[in-house]
Image 1 (cartoon, rainbow, N blue to C red):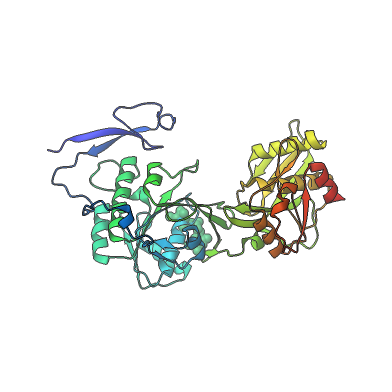
Image 2: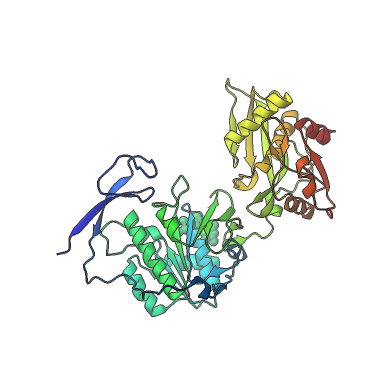
Length: 452
Ligand code: TYD
Ligand code: MG
């Protein structure tokens, strides 16, 4: 009889321990260890997918550049993958529930009509998937659907169908009968991913794995999953808004700086090729409390609207609230305005919002945010033809930001008249730009130039 072995796994980071411990020594989380049964493999038991062993080769003998990429029928996805999907690559596609992961990948599976695609779903029934496909409105004769969760059965079907692209929805529902623990547990996830990895590498079929994300933003279950795969894509956004961002957090075949933007419509996800246009509200009249920031997300320049509302605090303690921007950074900006520029904001409520439900991390947004705050506080509208790109230092100086040439050309392309940047960025201003570039060094100088 096969011996049964159990072990304890941290459900957060995947660390293993022979006995139960309260605090994980690896990730410092409390109460995350769960006992999982790892059935000892019998000597005859077959691996889910067997491989032939390889011999070592001299690195100089290996022919470079034979990673074959094929473009998918989705420009945004190609961009984040670094120019197309690499054969034999394993791509983890993470995102919160309801964000549109299944929709996007089903859409890819349906529109890649020259590829034979197998979409394996452990979450929805065939009928549900068919309904979704009808909603998306694309018909593909080469797209197969399999509702199965046991990995051994999936591999059997794979041998028969021999697809050219495989989608697994989702890794948390997969189950291997080599291990006794429940689907979604660390050892199951790890084993199934390893099997899929081996399948991808031996057959050169690219595999997309959908993974759910926990509240704190990590892929549910283990970090180990992220180490094993070639590429990690994150699908994010606010489910109440229509825009979704696709980012790479790891890519063995390209840069992690790319960003894809989609819009959720009634008929699936639509690529947004000119994001700056949709993220700015077209207004006839200038309104107070609004300023446009020229930011970059990775390597992609974007024009985005920052909105602020400053009002006298109704209750004792003034409120500070921020949507889409770091609250601590907002507090810092308010302190700089108060201490360095003499604006009295101590008794005011300040609300900040980044339009479109998008989260911004680029510190170059600072300059637009202070402009929006002052514009609201002083009730002076800012011309909608001005935009801003600069980081604000603690002493009130306007610091340079990266990729200023791209920001300037995006602003010019979008028809802005003036862009305000740090004077330390002066050298990098493209000679050919037609937009008026205002360079400023200190906040006082900035205000006098802006309000004249
Ligand atoms: P879904 O792909 O099921 O999310 P996930 O797999 O990430 O959990 O998408 C869920 C949401 O998308 C759902 O609330 C409905 C919405 N949706 C649309 O708005 N338009 C569409 O065409 C489709 C298919 C879904
Ligand atoms: Mg889903």
